[in-house]
Length: 445
Image 1 (cartoon, helix red, strand yellow):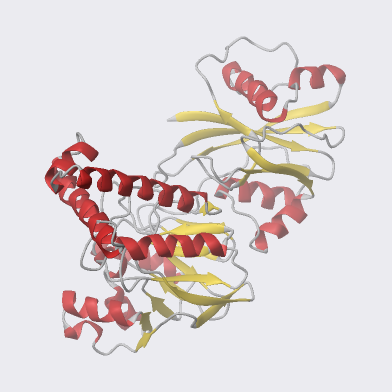
Image 2: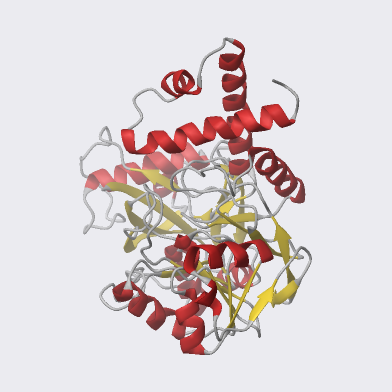
């Protein structure tokens, strides 16, 4: 597991946070404290000053000095020498939970300054930085305007209650892995549950959510088996829900949904296309005894932090797929249109590459603040959508060029996906076929 450091700069009344750039590969668009990875080249020599925590090995402290210099252009050693740094406290370690593909053991250090500094931020890392009161930043999170990992939220809550807190903070995720599934709330009002599911590798979990102020929707409940279902229900029951909303018909998004609806006496909301496809897969009896509501573009299904949440029809990956977003466009729950773990598959009969391109273009134009995928973490902004669309366009040009060279689909497969493991080849071939279908529909071949 990689190690990293975070510098929590504070004064007597304020704390400093940055917003990470949306294009970063790790935690894009997240509010965080400055810091980064510990390098093998960071020395392990002792510091002479008594201001440094003695419980932390020197290499970690050298990494802190280096990262602060790189990200803020701030010389921590000079600041200590000049008296600008009052104290440096070890305030805890956070270990990224196992469900996140980017795992770190992160050391947090509270660095108390005599006054707020106008740091020279590395624009490649930070969109902006701000000094604010802990209460002010915590309220900003509670208004839905901050995307942050659980330890950062715990820090803000702790300092909101006591700005002078200087002891190690318990930043572990509060759940019992033996009896519950993990839940995080990176955006306030969007509770993200992470049950293991029967999904497409390399992903092994399908995100389920509870959203809504008064009327709460449970979205895509799909634990992989009865044991995971028991854990899942224990977790979601702590919050409760009034109805089940399904984004689309793939089994890793609706498994156990009918059973949950009957047990909790709730209805199920979904598109007409999804309704018919699930009946074809699971039988006409699947929805027996359940109140079904057909949802379509523009329907208001609940509110989130006072903002009406509307339905968006987003075909491409699946013809009947629905997305959700509040009028504030603070977030866009995109389902399987995008993933931060693995790749979205576009294949017949439910997938359509032309519609997929159009749907991505539409969401990019809406400019939501954050994108919520069904697999992986929430991401800030639309950069990932833009890069996905760019990649698909480049792939399409490859397919077109090979077609004009009279290559068969099998020859294209070998050229475009060299070394791909055998089990994934059929899916890759369907991607090529989906691109060819789009090119024919556009009269380009």
